[in-house]
Length: 340
Image (tube, rainbow, N blue to C red; front, top):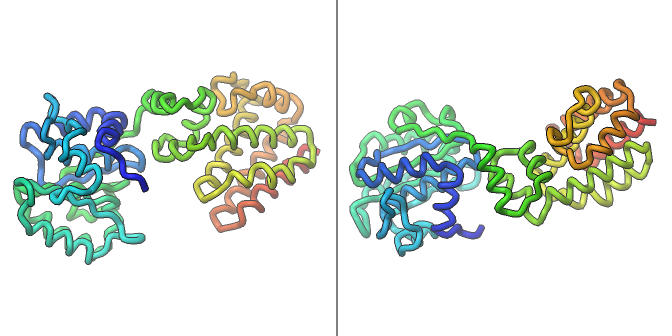
């Protein structure tokens, strides 16, 4: 994975969590950094970027007047690239953080700082620590020193041992505001219609990045709209279309989940046009409103409700590892049977 540069980390932290980023700049500037923090929040809310910004601000040679790192000095650059001897990031080894990793961390805790008076330890996915690893870390946190700051990152602080929670300062990362997410996607030249759809799928910026990479979302959206056109006509071409046009875009579990979500949103739009008369701007697929309106006028209430029930029931089979191709084919055949 490509390492982010220091300016990019700072930009990410300020973009996702401007208030927290500036708060920690002031804390570092005032010399009031605590010995241990627990950063809690869903994936994509900027926990790692803010923790790296804290470290950079602490060591930065030329912080700005607000105490935030400059992002351009040698200290910032080395921290951003994982090359600073006094800033250590610990991540899961496989599915968990193991006791041997924490023991190594403890050995580092016991050493003096190499280039200054401070050491920073960032523990990513801290909730994946084994019980033995967590108990071992607890012994370190229980004996804080002024020269060490530990930052633990978790998606949910409830997953952490109560003893660790009680000995760290909890910082909850709020959801990123919709307006900021829109600006984030606009900066990547994502179209307005794709932005509307993307934000109905997720508000996780890491997932948004996956959606818009190589225009994946736009490509899948176009294919599903064509598939829906075949379905509306009751045309059996919808079945081979899944195999030749939709499945080639599905590369992993994430894209499988998103494809199912998009199909559900497409039929949710059909329902909303039929029963709630929602206008195009309120819909995930609002740019094909005429197609949705035509289908809503053509199909009976019972047909629409039946197709939605079939889709939701069949989609649940993904949770029991039924082949994804089979799921899409069954959905297609069920919809064709209902329409015809």
